[in-house]
Structures are given as C-alpha cells and as structure tokens.
Image (cartoon, rainbow over all chains, first blue to last red):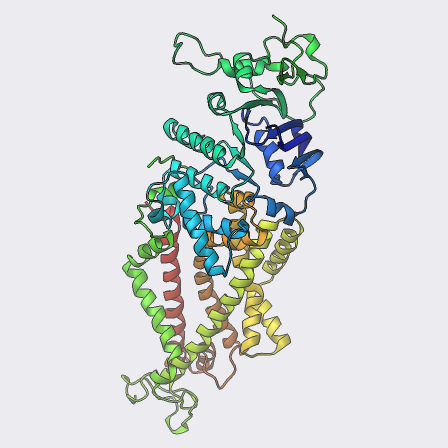
Length: 330
Length: 303
C-alpha cells in the first residue's frame, strides 16, 4: 500500500532577516504514504517545524518558500491561494500545535471550539444552522469520547483552563481529527506532557491512525517515541535531511554520525554504567553556509573530504544517508 | 492537574466549573465596596439623565425674571421649591443640572461607542494584518496624536458648526486613536499565540481570527480604557460647552452653566459651583469604577 499522500520535492524555505537570508529548510525531499507514520527527528532549529509549516502554508513573513514543490494527493500546494488553502487546512491536512496548554482559545468552551471546526468543514452536516449545530455537538461528544475524555458529555461545556495538560492535548487532537483528515501533522504532541500521559496520547494517535487509515507525521526530538510508533524516520540537521529509512534500520544501524550521536545521548535504564555522550556544540547559523557537510564542525569523524557538497546516498534498501563516510568502518 | 505553569494567570485562579474568567473578574470587581459605591453613583447619574422629567421639579428652560438669582434654599432668602437657587433668568438650577446630565452622559457615551468601535476594528486590522495597513493606520494615529485635543475639536466645530452630531464627531474624530493603540498592541501580543496559530492550521479566515479568536481575549483592557476615556470625554464636552461650542442654549449643559455663572461668581457662587460639582462627581465616579475594573481584570493585581 504505497500510495503517496504527501510528496515534498527539493523544498527550500527562507527567511529574509536583517542579518541576511536564513535558509531554514534547504532542499528537503520526502514522501508520506497512505496509512504510514513518518517520524521527523532533529534538535531545535533543525527545520522540522518550518518544513511542515510550509506544507500547511503557515510560514509567516519574512519567511517564504523559495523553491520546490509540495504535492498533496497529487495536487500542488505551493502557490495555492488563501481560500483554497483554508479549505484544505483542518479538513484534509490537520496539524496539532507544539504547546497544548496555550493552543486552545481561553475565551471559548471546548465544545464551541470543536463545533466551530465541524461547522466550517464537515459537509456531512445538513439542514438549518441550528440542526447543523446539534449534529456537530453530537459529533463533538463522539470525538471527545474517542480521545478518551471521561464524562465527555458533561465536560463539553468546560473552558480550556479547567482541563489538565494531557486532557488539553487530547482535546487538540480531537479538534484536529474531527473532520477525519487524510494527513495529521503532530508537531511535538508530547513535549509538555509527563511520560505516562505521553504514552497514552501516542497510543491514541496510533489507534485512530489505524481506524481512519490516516497518514501521520510525528515531529519530535525523542528518538524513543520514534522507535515505538513510526514506520519510517527522517533525521534533520541544519535544514537538511541527513538520514532517512525504515525505523528499525536507522535505529539499529545508524549511518550518519549525527544520528549516532543522538542515539548515544539517550540514557538507557538497562545499561546504567554506560556514559551518555552528548554531541558537543550546537546547530550552525543558517546564513551563508558553504557547500560542505554541515555537521563537520561537531563531527568526530570529519576529514578534509567533508569539505565538498555532500548529497544523499543510498545505503541499503530505502536507507539514505548524507555522509561520505557512511558504510565505511572507521 | 498537571500544572506546567506556562499560563499562570489561568491556572492560578480557582475557578468554579462553568465560570468564565470574565464572570470571576466581575465578582472580584463587586467585592470592592468603593467600586460598588461609585458604580451606584454612576448608575444614579445615568438614571437621572434618563428620567430627567420625573426628577426635575421645574421646567429647566422656564424663566421667571421675578425670581432671578434666588440663593439655595438653606440660605437667607432661599425658597424650598428652588433647592439650589435660580440663575440670572430665574431658571431653576437643580432642574437645569438634572437636564444637563443628559448632554454630558449622552455625548460621552456616543463618543466612546463610536470611537471604541472604530478604534477596535482599526487596531485589530493594524495589529493582525500588518504591512501597509499597519503603516497607514499607525501613521494616521501618530498624526492625530500630534494635535492638541481641545484645539482640534474647536477647529472641527468651527468648520462644521455646533450641534449634537457635530460635537460627537468632533470628539470621536480623535478619540478612536486611544482604543486603536491599545488594541493594536494587544493584537500584536496575541497574534502569534498558539491558539491563533492553531485556528489558522484549522482553516480559519483572517476575519474569523481577528473577530472571534483575538477580540474576545483582548476585551478587558478595551473595557477599562473606554471607561477611563469616558471621563475625559465628559470633561472635554464640558470644556466645549464652557467655550460656547458645545450644546447650544437654551438647552441646559453643565459646561455652559459654569460659564454663565462665572460673571456672578463673587456674589451668586451657586450658579457655577453646583454644575461644577456635578461634573466633578460624575467624572470621579467613572474614574473610580474604571480603576476598580482595572484592578479586577489585570492579572498583575491578582495575588
């Protein structure tokens, strides 16, 4: 079942700032298939959110898409006008925001916020505005139950501040899923949550994904989450994809020194004596980068050969790496 | 509750189920005795203006030259049917004060209504849309702020002539600038908040986001500002009437009553003093109410 839902080709998103042109996303190409869960990993500032902000058409000035194409179900999204984009957002592509605690409008009840989305997008509602509202309310209760909110019916008319963080995250997911989108972009859905709630929320997304045959893009910086829930994973660094492949492959046999570094910096309960090795330094500034490996400055294996333009190269089935040393035993 | 604390103002407040922050804040406002007392006073003034014919003992414009310049009732030569005395034409001062409240309150309310509506819409557009819309509106605001308020209003009335409508527009013409600035700032602070971003991600239009997502969240400061400004506008209206550019005679107005009484100030002090006192009390009550609202609605004042 390899029908691509989302295809991004050579996407370049830039921000025209006072200090110069910042290329936040530089030549990203990727594919999300139907019913698949793709994990996007990378540290802060690696361009994960900007990439999918570009997909949603939510990149704000001074940012703009400089090159590339984004196709959703075969339809080109770059250059789509505001009205057409609005029809797509929420209905076919939904996105949950990073911070669940502030992503719900404090001035409205939860029911109000779910119903508003249904009224805007759901064509299945019929009749007068009042009967539409009534149907939407029924659906809202269904959605709240689906995301596992106890006593959904009585809690529907509560305000966001009356819910806990995990509950609010679930409500966000309920809103995002209310119109049964083809693609869900979950931008760090679990960062603000504690571990038990985190697992519940992710199980929930996986569950609904199965039920609705929905594609999911899970943006995170937690490789553990990726290992557990994603079919494929892409590692981003400084605006580029540096490694991509099936989750098992990438985690068991990481090729890029950055991926290796990320995996080495995870503490393991099974091996408490092992020292955690952090990756020294931080992501380079994305202004006027030379044509060379962007990870070079922090890489322990860097050689002079890294000072050239490095392309993605194949390394096994469906596994690609942006490193000239990949595959070599050093 | 997993309280992560990124929205302290929301989480810190112990709210009862189903109670909005607005209701909670109104309760907080009502818990202050001072606020309640002055709210009652402001409401008293409004009732007085609405039911002027019921309260006024005489026709405010009925002149009786035989009864001119009567002192207040408790002074020698006073008459209890003219409690606050009579003016140079023998008109009842109390009745004129009661009728005069109509002009002050009506003009104040209209100016604030017009200015707030225009200001809020312009501020939302400037703050949310940004770009050239923001440049045009913000520069216009800067230019209008460069003129002294009263002189600007006098110039406008001099061009258009006095009259209720003209006074309201002369004042509203500049007054919208204040709510506009407040709303623009609040919008800038709110436009990048996650829930606005989330609304965009769910396919909301710009108009929907401005009016339905942002506006309800910035209404509190607008409410506070408009009450403070209402007091200012009432003083301005009184100043215009004092200068003879406001409500035209023979209609009673506090400002013109103070002006008329000025020439009798030394002997017949009550002519200017009582309308002046009325202006003072109305403005004071509005200011105290707005102060109370600010205390209740500004999270910085919550402990």
